[in-house]
Each structure stands twice: as structure tokens, then as C-alpha cells.
Amino acid sequence: MNLIDEQYTRTPFYGIRRIREWLRTQGHVVNRKRIARLMRVMGLEAIYPRPRLSQANEQHHKYPYLLKGVQIEFPNQVWSIDITYIRLRQGFVYLVAILDWFSRYVVSWNISPSMEVEFCLEALEHALQINQPVIFNSDQGSQFTSVDFTSRLIAAGIQISMDGRGRVFDNIFVERLWRTVKYEEVYLKSYENLNECRENLAGYLQFYNDERLHQSLGYRTPSQVYRNH
Image (cartoon, rainbow, N blue to C red; front, side):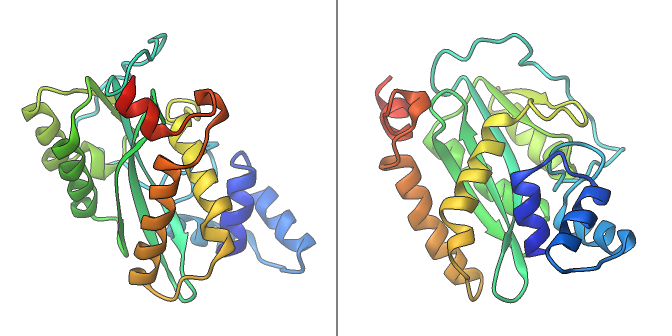
């Protein structure tokens, strides 16, 4: 699973067949059914060129994508949320983050051993204590389409936007965040347990927000752009 995670992070357009052939080059002969099962556990979608950690619930209301052609011009104009797989020495957890598109600032995050809606709601509540966006964008996963989640956004007067299925560029800023977190933090370490994972991610995400210079931000930090624009 860790090898699949690393390769998928490098090449998110790889499906089951390419993952299988790549694993063979690493000395692991694994059949397609096992790879498909592991990718489902990890929340990786083999058909679409992006992680699908939050699976859709067909009974939940889906909202339209509101960001086509929209110019991102100021902080808190658009936030987006996503979930990714984080490996531990034994097992794994899931990381959710809420990102401001304009500044790349991580407004809030949380981790959980399961993908229940509660840990996403906790991240949302923490974010809304800091500020609130004009538009909140997500995929069509069951956590984000649930009544508990959407009703909180509606109550705050926030417009809800949802990605179309398989549209890799709808949430590209969060996808870039995941690659950065994994290459600069997760893949360099081996967390023993959830608490150690939380402690290390807290340190890294503080560094990411407050110290890491972004070329796309004119070599400023996300915090500088988010708070001083």
C-alpha cells in the first residue's frame, strides 16, 4: 500500500494495470484484483486521474461546480477540502485539509483512522472559527454531500461548489498540497501511531503555512499572503 501510495502520488494518472506493471519492476508480483482491493481501501480511484478518498452517496444532493472561469483574486474567496491517505509504521490514517485557494494557506486540518464525516466536520468548525469563504469547493464524496456538512455551510451563507466526477483540475491546489506534504514530511518519516502522526503533521503544516516560501506566491509564505493581502 505504501509503494502504491508513493507511485500514485508521482503519477496520479496510473490505473491498476500500470500500477501492477510498476510493482513488478520493484520485485512485487501482485495480481490486478489485489491491487484493486488495496486501492479501494486507500481511496484511490483507478478510473479517474485523481484520488477519490471520499466515495459518493447517490442519495445525497450534489451541487454544481461554480468555479469554471472564475478569477481567484483575494483570500477567503474560495476554500476547498479534500482527504488523503497517510501511512503509519503499522496501518494508516486519513488526513483532511481545508485550503484557501488564493494564498495556499491551510486554514484547518484533522486526521482520523476512518473516513467518517465527523473528522471533516471538526475541521470545518475549526476553519469557520477563523474566517469563512464566499465559495466552498469539494468533491462529491459522501462526507461533503452529507446533510450535516452541507447544512453547516448553508447556515453560514456560504456558496457550495462540487467537482465533476473525474475532473482532475477542479481541486488542483489541494492535490499539490498533498504531494508537498508527502514528499517533504510523510515519506521522510515513519510514524508509530496516530498521536505521533498528528504531532509531526502539526509541526510540518505550521512550517508550510508560516515559513515555506512558495514560488507561485512571489517567494512569500501562505500566511503572509493570507493575512496581509
